[in-house]
Length: 394
Picture 1 (tube, helix red, strand yellow):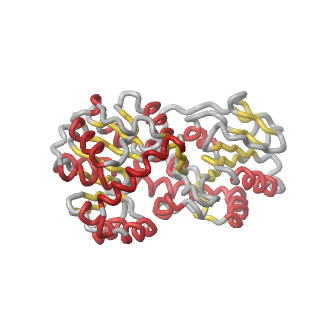
Picture 2: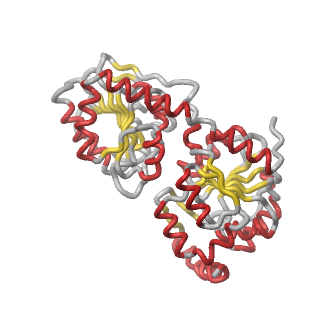
Picture 3: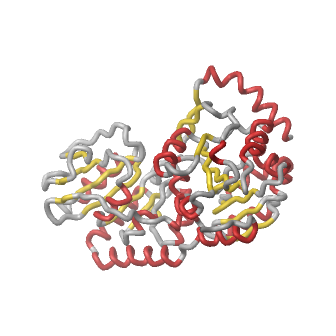
């Protein structure tokens, strides 16, 4: 079965130049540099593999803790661009195509202390080559959702032998149970690395002309801006001076909103008559959440995205809401008691929170303290690496 996988992947290669590029839901995936095995600056370090932009952001605490001892491979072009921006001192490159000779040669040249795979990036050639070269391979903050589990089970005969010498440091008990059933050599629960999010040390300025309720929609996708406008109009009946701040996930995407609109790239001051403030800048949302009366985390009210990390506003004690399609973050939401809502439930929930300051404060503080209690995932991962891979920490 492994060699059939290799054959199918090889046969598809001649079609790649015709396609020019493929696009995944997590970002552009081109073929540039995927056949290269050079990564001299990443030699004899921990090789941390992540998928795309969201995952690049989530591993920040681990990258920071391993600074000087870690290199990154990223699956998508956009993810690599982000990695090089926020970790300029960390060696990073696009992950090689998962053809066995290429991956094995890549690992031989790189000679990593260990391969660390974030969440659920399962690449058969990488797993096989790391076994043959005796490179320890560890899934960190490992995630196997029910859908992923069913998909892997269909190819259990092919994949289970590849898991037999791998370690799975799980984000939850449920993930750990699935990993054991799939045949991983060793499984431990360490927690979700996204909980080790660190709020920005420096805030950003936003001048609002008067005291008013502020609803911040973070990392919105197509279809959610329309929902934000619809909810804004309803809330305006009770709160005439309400301000809705919208931060699209992809800054370059066109946002059509009627009404009095301002853009952050033009001004950091919100006038009294402004209804909508569009954050068309990069890297400021996590700080801007501090101005929110309530935060709504996007990518979760439309299907196919999976949501974005609610810990960012929670870490600032901001009462936070996510939508029913935020599948990637539902476990975190449940852990932190962040309400998970259908579209029809959003307006009444916001209305209640805006009308009841005590309830709003309770929700924000409760989520915040639950988050504080569950941090320390990075330390647990480092402790394991220190015991098993002889990590020499600074």
